[in-house]
Length: 191
Ligand SMILES: Cc1cc2nc3c(=O)[nH]c(=O)nc-3n(C[C@H](O)[C@H](O)[C@H](O)COP(=O)(O)O)c2cc1C
Image 1: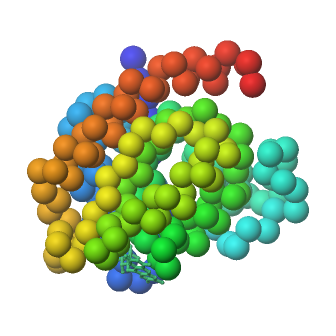
Image 2: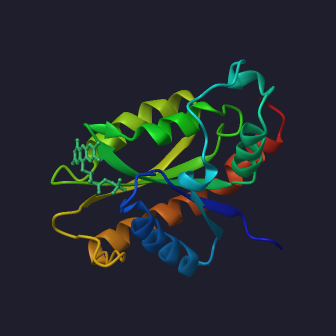
């Protein structure tokens, strides 16, 4: 039987970003756990313009091909992990823009957050993202917050450490537990 799909979404899009290195670190840990087919999704490649759909996403009547493609991508996900930087005490705008494009595609899916920043470790990015996902009815399955000055990306590679790795594994474990009941809920037609 095919494994459920876990999408690891790289939120940052700027030249020189460290997001892909951290996402690859999480991808390797999640893949080794073996419970999901893990996909890396890069918002730089998704390349959405600043939100410009004429209708509210809740009605799911999209005008543009890029939105339809983005919708198909997220529809495929059984679970999601957002790898987000802290920008100005929040998460970055490209991530919010990509979230705003869709609505039903997010609903009743389990998610985790891997956040990073300076000494505040991306905690404020996590705190900013959570109420948005609560409104969209995603189900929180944990977070890892990374202080880049202490655990930096070197030559495009993020080494992590034991504490962070245990946190990453805990997210995957919780996503694995929450996936079957939430999938059943989504398929029940109750919503
Ligand atoms: C626009 C901008 C704002 C930032 N604001 C914060 C901040 O509020 N708190 C923090 O800890 N780090 C902040 N940083 C540092 C970033 O977390 C750090 O540069 C990180 O590498 C950004 O992720 P990225 O390389 O994937 O883009 C900021 C960086 C940028 C580019």
